[in-house]
Image 1 (tube, helix red, strand yellow):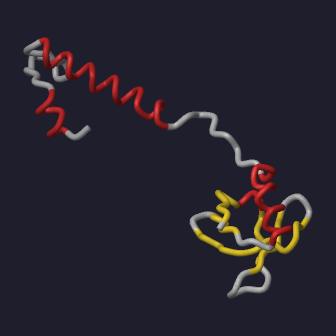
Image 2: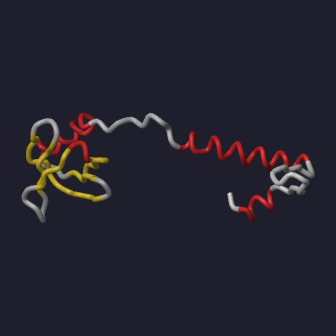
Image 3: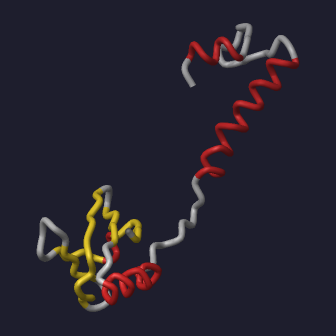
Length: 118
């Protein structure tokens, strides 16, 4: 918290000790307590510690659909969007895709963030 913001939210009066603070009203004490509570608990509420890991098997149904029906999918890979049709599965960790601009694109399954059916 910046010094300017803390000076506005919490009024304090300096005593002989450099580090002592006294609150002039119960309201400022409540505001200070509320801000401390927010700073402690907000990061934990928004970001769970155990994020579910991406499972390549979760996309398998869409891969099979694209392979059999020759329908296009959109792959979202680390901030990039790659449209294409699945040509074949390469083992358990990659797929081969083609689109209008490239005949052969190899995508590692552990790098895929999301897949959308066109």
